[in-house]
Length: 176
Picture 1 (cartoon, rainbow, N blue to C red):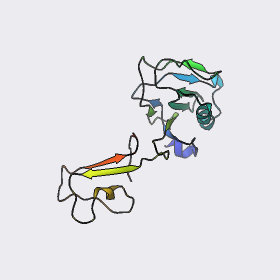
Picture 2 (cartoon, one colour):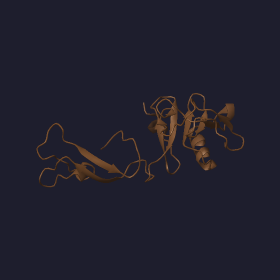
Picture 3 (cartoon, rainbow, N blue to C red):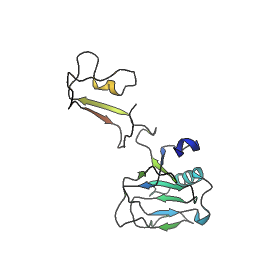
Picture 4 (cartoon, rainbow, N blue to C red):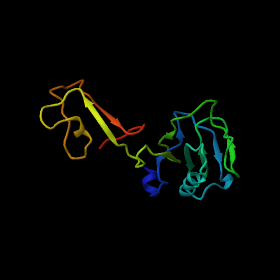
């Protein structure tokens, strides 16, 4: 079940919603609890309040559906020293950093992460190279140009490869 699509949520500009806890592997940064024990009314309130707060340390935002907990998470795992007024600083789960927090895919949480550089939630391909190219119109750009064309190697089978360059750091989970 995909909670993101099912909920029909909109996101603040420059951010993307992912399903699951906000984690860097198993680590998460220190966080600000700005809604106390009552929780946020929903993920929209949680996410938009965090982004609109202008809190400079904001890295990701996690909303727990079952308890309505709203966590504004930073990269350092220590408790934040600059939580907005009225928010309670909470520690992460370690003493270091959690710089690559993203949704883990669990069912009880939604994770708001900064979009890549183009702000669309999708990567922009900026170039490519391949182990070889079949003669004709089978260049590596065909693998991602959306025109229904394709890349083909020059007779290679096992070991053929395609490398693409994108506009910002990202984890690619699907190419269409």
